[in-house]
Length: 470
Image (tube, rainbow, N blue to C red):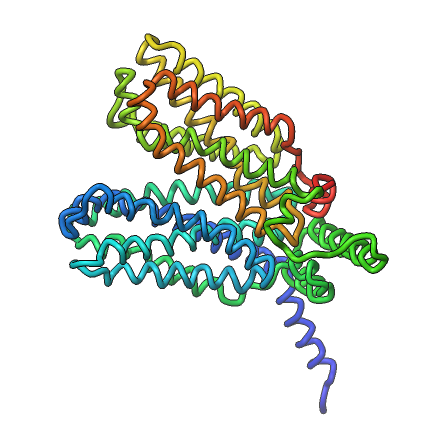
């Protein structure tokens, strides 16, 4: 006999397995892992160049200008890649651009193995590192929105904050691995090319990921968005958020049909419209003011601390890096419990005060100056964690990629300014005034955040963007 019910039961069981809580949790773990892996790779790529600078300089006969071009390549690439990838991910979707971006990582990383030794080597390596920077910028503006759009509101802050921990770990691991390989006599091309292995793993792991329901809603593809939510999303809060986004989109379409408003495609110009300028000003300004003094002080930690009678070894860059990592971990642990504003605003006022004391108290005891710099590193890294959270939350779905990309690109201006201006400032105006200038930047960030930083803890993305865009 034939028992039709057995076939039906088999199909139902398969569907239940595919949409079970276990399946959804595994998907979320995979999504978090591939994005965190991308940020680890970002830090690794930027950090791996340091241990092999000597062999590169000798092999390629590099002067200071050529070495600077190679080192600055990723920074310039981020400036270009972040807004470009942000525009592309809002136009073409998170899913395809997430894969394309890691494909660029993979190709550029592998190209490092084949850098020539003669004429043109500097240009080759600078271009390759520039393309890797473009991919790094893409990770900010593609992966951040994708992760935020799948994350439950009660975990979103922690999951986004984890990415900065991954960056720090990647940077430190690059230094460790690069040093060990260099000491073992490994050619410098193989050392910097080690990033290819991780890039290949992450590229393959990104195949098969679904499109973001939030992005589908912005394109009017509501049924697809609901189907993906039912299959991959476990959190009832997330289902509610997606329903809110659908309702909001319907209202926008109805208003457009009545001629009251017009639905426009994502563009940089829209970031400065009446509805969205607050989100743009806050995210880009906050990010700029957070990283400018840190990049200056961390990059030249030994020189700065030596000036005050303390420098080198653990007390220098290692100590500052360790406290920075601790600050990020603290924020990640507390962000979804205490909220965003309390971890953003007070720390900026405190860091501005710390830098002002260092700048004005010229004959302060060396041990006190060291303690102040360590405290600055801890609290600055704590609120810098929010640079990975706020841009992925406050922009509406149709601008989330380009908004985060613009903020990331603008922050690179601060990173470059801090890195290149501090040596000049120390030589021309002195250490004290240089620290006062850094304090002024931190103070500007504190004022901006006091004015504009929203509290987004536990709120859906639709609710956040609706309240912040007015």
